[in-house]
Length: 224
Ligand code: DX5
Ligand code: ZN
Image (cartoon, rainbow, N blue to C red; front, side, top):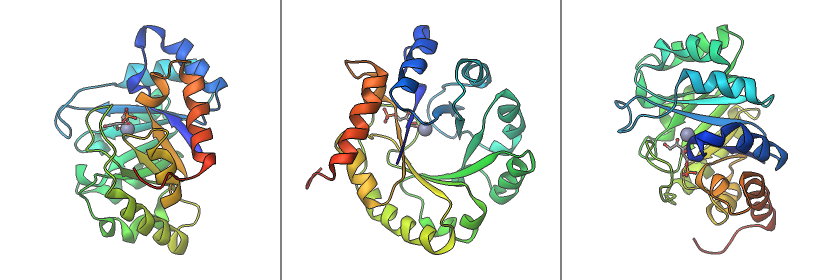
C-alpha cells in the first residue's frame, strides 16, 4: 500500500520543509493537483510548482490533470518534471490518444474517473494503464467528505484489474483519512492520495503519513 500526499493542502510558504518531512514519514511519491477553472470549478497548481517540486524531492511526482483536453499540456507537464500523469476520462474524447502521447514520452500514465462515471467507460483500455484512479470526492477542492458509495466501484475495479491488468495500480483520491483510508484499502485500493489528513496533522506531515499507514495496518473499522 502506498501513501501519496497531495500538496494541495500544504502551506506553500513552507513547501520544501513540509515535503521533506512527509518524505521522512514514508511518503512514496507526491500528488500535484492541476485545476483549470473549467473541468472543475476551481483553479490550483500549475507548471512552476511541478518544476519546484522536481528540485525539492527525488521521489516520483504524479500530476493529477483536472483540466479539459489534457492532451494539450501533457508534454509541458512532463518537461516540468512529472513522472506519472493522470488524465480524466471525462475531460477528452481522445483519451486513448492522450494516453499514448504520455507513453511515447516514456512516462507513466493513469486515468481518473469521477464518482459518477461508470467503470465500464475505461474497461477496454485498462491493459494500457499504469494506474486507475477512482475519485472518492467530486474533484475541485481539498477537504471534502469521502463518498462511500465509491467503495463498491473499487471492489469491481479490483476484480477487473486482477483479471486484465494485474500490474496497474488502483488509487483513491478525496476525503481519505484514518477512518476512510482503511475502508478503501479493504475494498481493493493499493494507493491512497491524502491531502488534508497529512498536511493538517498536529505532528506535521511526516506524522500524518505514519498515522495513516498505521490506521490502514490495523484494519477496517466496521462502520464509516
Ligand atoms: C480534489 C483533489 C485531491 C485533494 C484531496 O479535487 O484531486 O487530490 O487534494 O484532498 P483531501 O485529502 O483533503 O480530500
Ligand atoms: Zn488529486
